[in-house]
Length: 259
Image 1: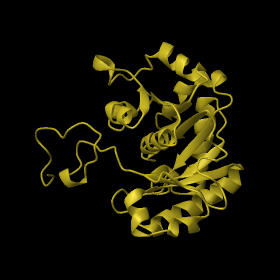
Image 2: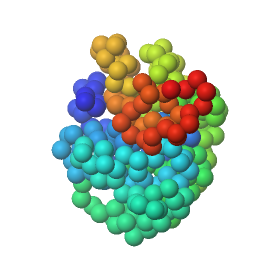
Image 3: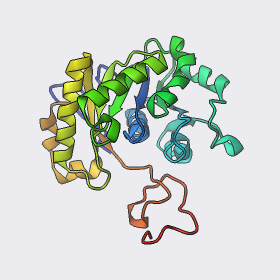
Image 4: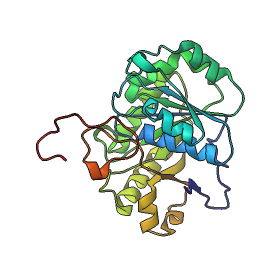
């Protein structure tokens, strides 16, 4: 997996946001968990010791904890509730969370629940994350972030809820399997406008690996480092030929027309 394509003379992972701890926040459907997981795996591929802390108490379908075994096979330790607590909607691993945040060895990637509700979980740990990169993942094709005004409102809400300053933006505009390079470029233009308005940089663009491959080296023309997304997370209702390696199996009885 070619995780990050360096552009403008940058070497892989020589990014302003690549500190010891990187926190990903964003609204529901932004692709935050997929981005966080791929980012963590890419760090592990570069030789770092990486822990992925799952603080998502909002989304029952797309949580980093679903990827525990898969991530371990890629060199990433996932810290999240286990066994009968796996689907809990409470941050019940306070000791493990504090330990991971306080550990100064290796890299820490934090996946925070969607919207301001999920970001509130960070409030209790904000004092320990003062040197973290906090990146807002923005998908211009989602209802609440389909304009600069909406994305700015989400930016303000996430900062207020988490008690942390967002230090950078991630352009992750997509339409699942219907994403085109045109969709990616349109989303990037909106995120660039948001960047100017809030005064923080676009750290990188996240694009699915298969899309990058179909367009050769055109990603370099985007002008930003690129995180190549290996689509891993899938929901139970997704059709069989579109499912990734991570996610709960479909229910016994699927809706009509879904195979």
